[in-house]
Length: 428
Ligand code: AMP
Ligand code: GLY
Image 1 (cartoon, rainbow, N blue to C red):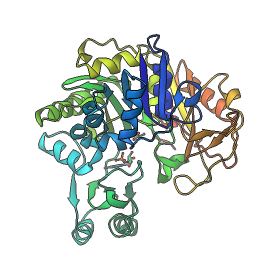
Image 2 (cartoon, rainbow, N blue to C red; image 1 turned 90 degrees about the vertical axis):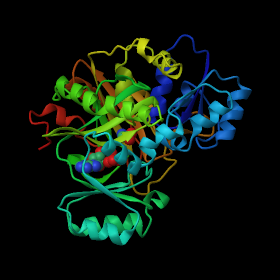
Image 3 (cartoon, helix red, strand yellow; image 1 turned 120 degrees about the vertical axis):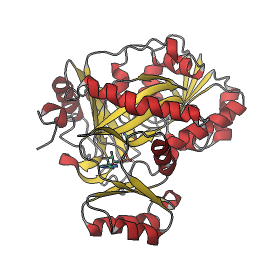
Image 4 (cartoon, rainbow, N blue to C red; image 1 turned 45 degrees about the horizontal axis):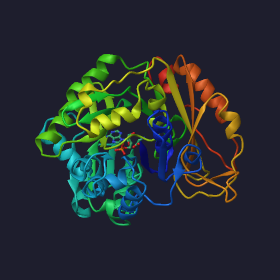
């Protein structure tokens, strides 16, 4: 088979790494890929939103299967486009991907089908939004409606922060057109859990749960990022809670999308808060998580490509899906300044030393022009994944390996997975 993966981040590196293990794959491409993906797949200079370019390349190379990684092309309808060109594509169509592309759509769907989520209101007028905001208790959560690379959400603890966030989104348009509508919602208290599932219409096969760390600094301080680290499994979350989340949230949402005439085929990713009243939905994504994928796929014992093909061919029910009991911890190495402005093109040393006992998934890297060296090319640069019998062992390996990698201004959190290792599940 010839397979093309679309995307360029750590998630796509992990997907390419897993697909490369299938013996039926004789040629793997990635558009556009990155400095690490280049070791496993031929990277082609076509970008994620260049649908015509992707279709032309796939037809020219007679690609058998196209796998879409990121949210933007899914929200823009890449699956519909490539299917119309006669290609076989993994991912939800545009009308199903809207569960991620519009928070307002997602919230209305959950309200209509009585699926647990934070109470909220949606506004497209700044004045009405501000008036409502002033009546709400703190903390309060303010979200740009559209996609904003995981950064369009502000949890405000003071009135000043809340009003600044609203003005930033709706008046200053910090997130561009994503901020034309705003969702103001109740603050949910608890532990977060990322629950991804393979979904084919009403067939739902959950993956192992994981937990992300969104704020840039230790102890969950600083602005939100795309994700600074993950771990899986969650030893402090009982399996009955995971089962409850599937029964009350993931399965009903897949069913709701079928009932709305928008059947979902792909990876449905529920971002959940485990509250005292049970799991509640924070968000849905229509794709693999980044960096959740970097800890989930190393724990998948079955063949990823065969599962993705089964979903695309409408036979997920019969797919073989097995998970390892081992643990994985991913530490993200970021550029100085991220999630704000950051430099690019800085040389990276020590990746091979880290790979001695860890997996290193590249997120924002590029090859030097001579193809010999690796330089930084993004905010999140590398994801270093340690594996072990339990979280502690996996975490120690991840940090030992991360410490061997050097580039100017490298920043990473030192408390990834700490929540799993305290009794209360809270970082002190
Ligand atoms: P999102 O992009 O919607 O996942 O939000 C980013 C992060 O903001 C989440 O991972 C949470 O940490 C936080 N967050 C979002 N919504 C809420 C909420 N209603 N209550 C508490 N925290 C939230
Ligand atoms: N790590 C969260 C996301 O992929 O959206």
